Image (cartoon, rainbow, N blue to C red):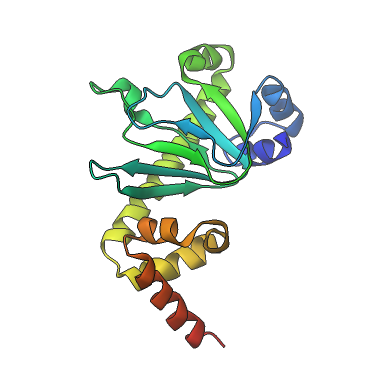
Length: 194
């Protein structure tokens, strides 16, 4: 399973495969059952994750008890909640396993120690975070300037597997629409398909 991580790390490093294998020997990997809550809203994050297998949902629950899906993380995606350094260190989100998951689990408390022992890891992590932040910025810009139908088609183009892996009401929340609107968009899309 760590082969997925090694292949991902290759994108951010000039290290050879044996060097990357050595770096990942002590990397903690854990499995989590579908439905496991990795982080509760309001809890101070102390872990970060990398998805080797499965799907993790990031969402918030408002004061009326309504869930709003913010993101989905699948294979070869990292999950970090950055609030632990702010004045209000509590997470604004839940992280929940939508499927049985196999994740790399990083301990934020020992992050600097890991970097001190493996400086190349810090450089790789910075490159990974820069790519993630750039992608999030692009996704956000695209989201606010597009119609719900355009959002659906962009999702279908970028992450088509989510449409089958995620419950429709969560997908609709992620797209910023009601489930019935998503049903109509899907029907129109299917009618246009050859």
